[in-house]
Length: 338
Image 1 (cartoon, helix red, strand yellow):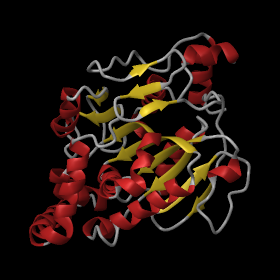
Image 2 (cartoon, rainbow, N blue to C red; image 1 turned 30 degrees about the vertical axis):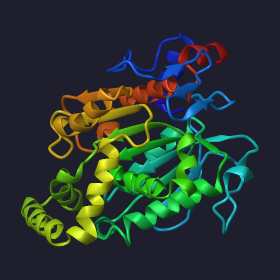
Image 3 (cartoon, helix red, strand yellow; image 1 turned 90 degrees about the vertical axis):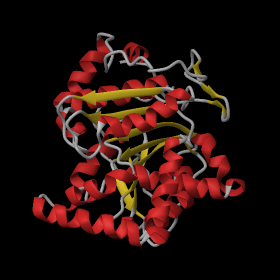
Image 4 (cartoon, rainbow, N blue to C red; image 1 turned 90 degrees about the horizontal axis):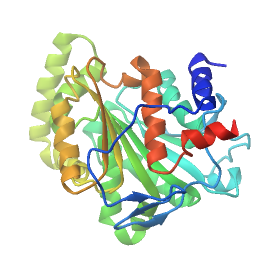
């Protein structure tokens, strides 16, 4: 058994929590019932999964790639059907929680799988969405195509519910392209919003951070980074109607909290790409509208590497957040059943 999972098991047996107390930064209109059901002002009553989820052991998982942008992971032993996106009903007769994992640029597969396994260990299925730098620069032929594929998957799998969004760096932008598409055709896609229960943002980058963030994702060579930044500043000005306007629309959806569900933010004081100020511009707007916001800021950590550098603490914060929104059974209840 992996050491950090063994430690979690010990914690559960003695009834301690995974993370230190995570008090919401604001009081909200959402309330949590004794059973973990969540009620919000615009999305009605949501019930947690019928099967209690817990980090009992590390589970193997299988995957199915739909395209170069989208891949599905599950810990289920049932073979994933081929040549179709209709998966959830084949894996189980019951609802299955799903995490939409929006990855950062140039993310390595072995790193992505660590995040995927965090959720498959909890009994979630995971849909990984990853774009290339070219997809970012050509939204209509890249990032928006990936967003369309996510929509297709959600429509094809109505029993994948509840849904959690976990976005890292530029993945936040891609997820908001999805929200723009939902907003543009609420008659067709609006009902999907009822399945979303939470959102986690790790090292989020707003439109102003693209010229700094993309070069760092592509190369460690500082001279090349400066040249790429100059090119991006020029590109975003010249290609306003084909690129920048789409970044702005997606950014607007993030700032208004289009999803309207509780959020957890991860960032650090020394990250030059996703600064505390950049994150605060977003979540303070949400606080002002009484959305529940949770924040974890490390003094010393690296962009999109918080999980790798602070693994135990990161997992604890994620699980505590999932407990707060009613997706995961509270730790003390899990401990009594171990």
